[in-house]
Image (cartoon, rainbow, N blue to C red; front, top):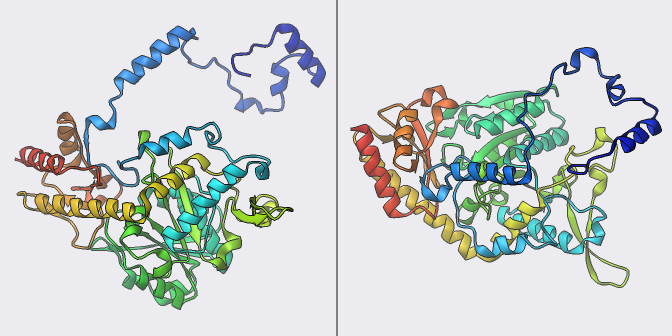
Amino acid sequence: MDYIQNTREETTEMLKTIGVSSIPDLFRPVPENLLLKKRLDLPPAMSEPEILRHMGEIRRSVRPMGEFVSFLGGGCERHHVPSVVDHLVSRNEFATAYTPYQAEASQGNLQAIFEYQSMMCALTGLDVSNASHYDGATALADAVQMCIAQTERKAVLLSRAVHPEYRQVLQTYLRNLDIEVLEIPVKNGLTDLGAIAPETVSRAACVVLQNPNFFGAVEDIEAASATAHAHGALLTASVHPLSLAILKTPGESGVDVATGEGQSLGIDPSFGGPGFGFITATEALLRRVPGRIVGETTDVDGKRGFTLTLQTREQHIRRDRAASNICTNQALMALRAAVYLAVAGKEGLREVAEQSLQKSHYLAERLSGLPGFRLKFGAPFFHEFVLECPKPVPEINKELLRRNILGGIDLGKYYPDLAACMLLCVTELTTKEEMDIFVRELSRIAG
């Protein structure tokens, strides 16, 4: 156990009890070629005051995001977090990121998860939600596996407009499962549904889209649903939760499984995490949903209570029959989302979404008027859009950083044909003054 050192006598006694004479004997089953034959190159140990001083130096070298004007998005973005969120989740009853054991004894935790599930179902317009997932990427990967198990088909149609890192995670999940991943091309910033041959859809388990997609553009989800369902495939969509305050819900659009990254619901960016993933689905897929599900019931006295339900679809059955290998959830982050959603309410969410929409369109209009800059795509967008630049994006971002501005994501890292483009994100926290400064500085850098 850390910081509690065993004495030599205690170590000798433990080794004797398990039948070995020395600590190296414990490693005899490990093949010789896998053993480390040298000391690890680690710094010397520090005392507590030295560690505190060292950590302080690291902290001082890191500048908080609030010191910058930020236009970074791509799945991790700046939004207002009401103070009540931090207040409630820091209570001792909740301050754990892990699922409670002896769950029915933890009625408060179970009710919090149940309320989260109920809110996510209302937000997405679907029938069932799990207790949360690791992140948006793994949620999407497990959603695809749900569809594969349901349809028993061996192919997946994946849009190239889905977040590149989500696609990488999905490829990792499917690499050794004899599943063919077929990419749907992008045309003018949108998934080119017309490029899918009917016979290809007929052998696919699902069509996978993101909405708004990685380029910020709003996809035609209803058309994708019609295409998929006409050939017996399911539709999986990774959605931005805040966009659902003003766009049609996945349930209204014919989506079978909706997933997404929940960081925008009351969680600070914090170096890119933690966040949480969410999965909601139609009732027909209830027993395919991975992770835990909390249900409402009554006890022997008729009082309202909560319990982990439908566990026979999860880790309590044979591994080869289980819905997935997830046996925990991001409960603390899901609680943050539940508190945020409760505090914001329907009108508050709509206000956040509308501000993000209006401000992003203001910035897009200003930038498209700069010489050498233009909007890459003409498709409708929510709060992110792609800007084509007259100079290399890394060079522009380096100059912006010197001016305390975090520029957009360099799309050339993921799409060679978009090497001169950056993805910009605007939220309700972005002010008109910040956008005007950004436009002015971009003009100077380009000139």
